[in-house]
Length: 110
Length: 351
Image (cartoon, rainbow over all chains, first blue to last red; front, side, top):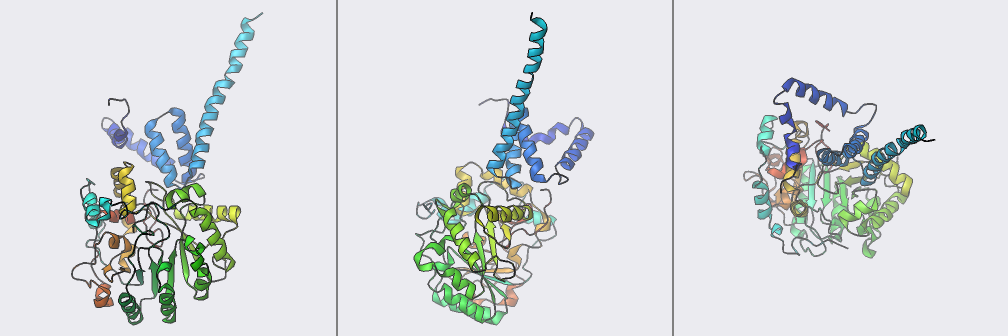
């Protein structure tokens, strides 16, 4: 079935570097450094990535960081809570813009 | 509830030749030997024999989803008397310091306690790979006291400190029984600092992914088992699931086989090769045949043809430098932080 997303394309991520190898190299090194243990543990970073993956709605990222979260020792309960955090921020973000709506209502109304 | 064994369901995978052919047919990019070659370890050889691992049979009161032995209540294979006698004689004469007793549920063997007593009398360190729930059966309720009396190290399987994941892998009700068993061991001093009674836990991933970082998980487990259940233990060992037997069946039926094998190959860690357990372990099957590890045993890969083949012709000096028999499943022991019956074997490459 033709779809825009193919799971096997995730493994082809590196092909994006073919036309701009130096930029890809810089991105790859920076990316690897970001996910190394630092002030945050690798597991915490994986859970953040999982939550962000749901926010940007990237199927590749969701698959990748579901696996990574499990391999870093996160439990399905922790991962589900991370997704709820993403969902809460998305929902809250919509709602808080309601203040802008109210401001504009006030401006237009008598 | 126990899961059915491959043998019981007449699965084609009950035939180890089918398992080996299934793995051999996968396109993996690199062979295990090519990876060893690049790491400067080909051909892989033993560096000694410091652990004699006795697999005393395939009988088990559980039948876990991931079991590499295809063990279960319906299995009848148990180590023969002549094999036990020869293994104990070999142990006494070889100077091998550690005996690792496994199964199935090894305690179900009628001569399990005798093996323990005789190995301890010979001055050997003895490890019992215990599924915990065996101690909840009426005839085995005093097993923890017996093990404590003989100062046996207990290596107990528990995939998760959460009931749902544990029962998903090991069968309904296993978690509750395992917690009760751990509390029993704790009351005897097992896992308690200063007691000298070692209680180590083993966790395998509940699914098609690699285990988490052992040191971080151990801290989590100690905190959570203490907080939730008041349980203490010594070490947590993370073990990668080997793509054989019932776990292989799971990988095939869930559509994860190729991706899992690709993951193992991609995560090959040269630093894990040095500490591979096959290099210091000799595995003895219920019928006396010799293997480089318990995984090779379950897919009928006996020791190399120029090495002793049975416990009856075992020679420790020859076995100490034998060539190790390898296959695609071996990637399971070199992925990430490495894996063995004693947990991780290396610092991770990229985890």
